[in-house]
Length: 149
Ligand SMILES: CCCCCCCCCCCCCC(=O)SCCNC(=O)CCNC(=O)[C@H](O)C(C)(C)COP(=O)(O)OP(=O)(O)OC[C@H]1O[C@@H](n2cnc3c(N)ncnc32)[C@H](O)[C@@H]1OP(=O)(O)O
Image 1 (cartoon, protein in one colour):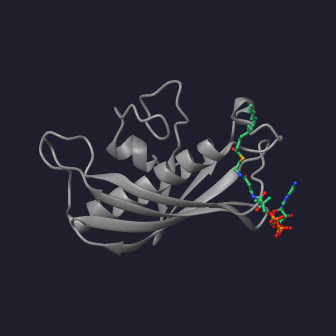
Image 2 (cartoon, protein in one colour):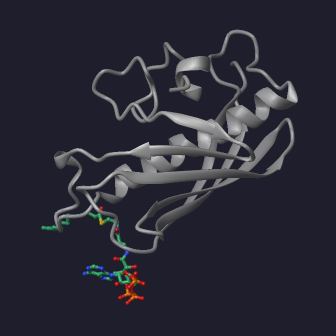
């Protein structure tokens, strides 16, 4: 199996959603697939929303972190690395989440992200969770340049 985007570029990242170095985190692993970035995510039982489906905060977290992979891949392709002294080139500035259908808790879910617009200062991406051929949740994500202060 190929090495994930996170393992390749951010092996020491402690991010709760996608950091390989966060042992208690979700450790999302995303893979570049042509113009898209895909991932599989299997929820844990403790990610329950109280109704036997996946909690909305966890959904937002994996949408955010998976869009991060698409954004950092796009930045890498365009030659826009992180500024000196900071670990990441961009940070989420907005995440407009829509919960379309209950998202199963006891299933492996598919995540798909695509970059829509990119400039060095701002990148937008669309990201969704699919299961059984249906979109369960989706988001438009706005990422802005992270500047050292
Ligand atoms: C003191 C205070 C105490 C407070 C305690 C509070 C504790 C709270 C703690 C918890 C907090 C945790 C908070 C969280 O984290 S909740 C997690 C985040 N939210 C969701 O996951 C909601 C997902 N979306 C939906 O369920 C629907 O879109 C809603 C209900 C919002 C609108 O749907 P609406 O009825 O308007 O439109 P529709 O009829 O066209 O349906 C759309 C699609 O959804 C399917 N669908 C709908 N319903 C169900 C269902 N029951 N069982 C199975 N499927 C259902 C339906 O079949 C259709 O799919 P499809 O047939 O096209 O495939």
